[in-house]
Length: 299
Image (tube, rainbow, N blue to C red):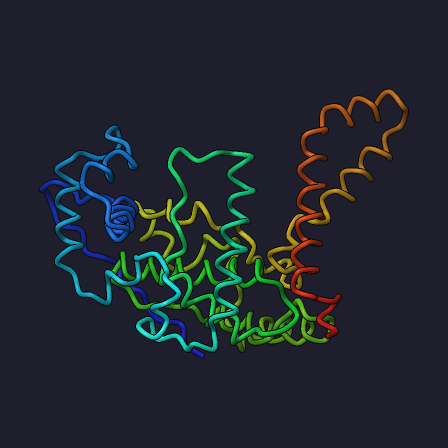
């Protein structure tokens, strides 16, 4: 396990023009890694957000960076597994993950279409998929693996953006103890956290050690696509299950209203929420079925 590392706060130069926020820089890098031109990147980001000069500056910086840095931002290509340091034995798993995650976001984008097409999974993401899968090979589905890996992806990006040590001790402990796998695991993990033998998950996820530095440097938007599903109050709930209990709670709330008029009013007002809750529950059941996951980790 990695130990909690002290984060050195970046020194801010006095005077002069502030640097562009790391979120924008990271997006420019990602788009450049897809082979996009300066004008294409400017179109994707929006000229109301960034100037052509800024895009030109950071595309040049990316082009001049080390190959290892560039590779992490590029779209994943299966035929280059060995170049990524991944074994060919990972092929079936990673290709299935690649397909299922793209379909997952395709479904999400039908509800709320993005302004520009969503970027394909990157080499960085796929590497973390495989690492997390090796750490947790059973009792979870591919959506769980994806969300956990995404937290690690973001942590790694933060450490690069802020030039700070990578600290994932809390997530490592969470994956090692597997509190979602059943009552015994949950009790053991909770005791280890209480006795301060392992790093707890932050409350909420955003409130970890680097938050102030991330917010101050303008990189907070890197979290936008990552659900807040690592919560210390519910360590036994897998990411794909998060909010799957919402439907039952809403239905109970409506049925507990004092009269039929109130029930009808709340059912109408909460209609769209009920519809979303039904979709969330069905999605959780679907992903578990696809991965043949049983209750409480009983395989």
